[in-house]
Amino acid sequence: MKVSPAKENILKRVRNALSQPVQLPFPRAEGNASVYNTPEGEEPEIAFAEAFSRLQGKFVFCADHEELAANLSALAANKDWKKVHCQELQLVHILSPYSLSFINTGEDMDDIDAGITTCEALVARTGSIIMSAAQPSGRSVGIFAPVHIVVAYASQLVPDIKEGLQYLKEKYGPELPSMISFQTGPSRTADIEKTLVVGVHGPREVYVFLVDQ
Image (tube, rainbow, N blue to C red; front, side, top):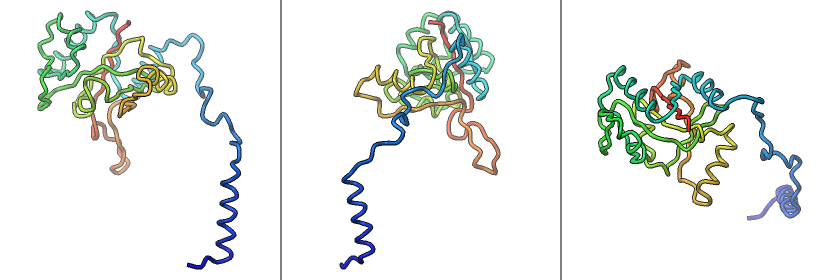
């Protein structure tokens, strides 16, 4: 096929440009420095609680595992939950001394009232929960359960998303999980007539129980 002189001229200019790469005009464009600076004296627990609550999340602070179990028991009684699904054996082991009869450890997720998991980290600035496929709960519990309960620790708090990703890189090295997600409050959409609807593509309620450890 014969190429027109005008087209050949354009292709020649493209080839010349590709053979002589130009340095990036903004070398810091990849975000070497954080765009968000944590205010001096701000406690990450409070920052996360405020951001998470603004997103309709429910935040509960627990001094230790005993208080965690007591708060979970009170919540289950208040909501009349009979089946809270948990696939994480470590979490089951932590809660087992407190005889929480509503905790279900089987594989059956039919007719569950809620699902309980741990997380990878919490992002203080955005109120986000970082989850991954490497967690024992996998991908399903935090999506299919009508209510998602997350048990996290103060040591898992990071200031911003950048630090959260760095935390995962340090934890897993080159073997990053196949899925990393940032869950920011209950599932919500405004696709239908611009009306905000909660719980369409995931849990309608999200609780974070933060243990001070």
